[in-house]
Length: 247
Image (tube, rainbow, N blue to C red):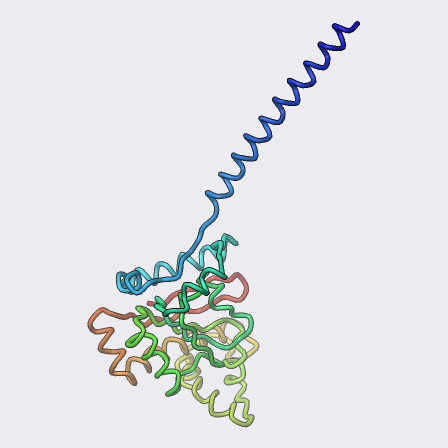
């Protein structure tokens, strides 16, 4: 009887030890797996920014948007990034975007602290202050791309189509009028309630702003001519989160 009890105890002890070892191995593998999936994006340095080309930056923005679409966002250590960015900033792109709260620019491109200059104004229109900001971002701080990004269901564009007049909003909406004129050959109902028509105006508005930048800024045009910079338009789809570039 004593031998039987002893045998049972030995079996229990051995089983417990094997289970413990198995759990440790499993936990170790899980930890290794989790670590392999973790991405630590670092703040750009001056040297890294300098090595980028405009085409490389466009591709990085597209890749970031793909991660955003796939819900596969980069793991970030924001506290570390904040400290890394204190001594200077070397963004790779400038985004001229609408102020719409549904357009979180950094998230859309899965960007980290220090990646992007973001200029926001209703209707992503151009004025002197915006143009000066673009020049600073590119000529002074070295960004390689300007993206003028409109978006679907844009309230500013819809208001311009409705010919809203209200205080200072009136003069802002007037800047969208050229895009409405550019969309005159749209086949369909030309009303703010027609989503396809609004999208047409949104895209034309972004493209016109690109032309205005090139026309009104000799500094930026020279950079483009030298291949140091690209200025492109884009449109963000509120429904699915996709950014379409018009290069």
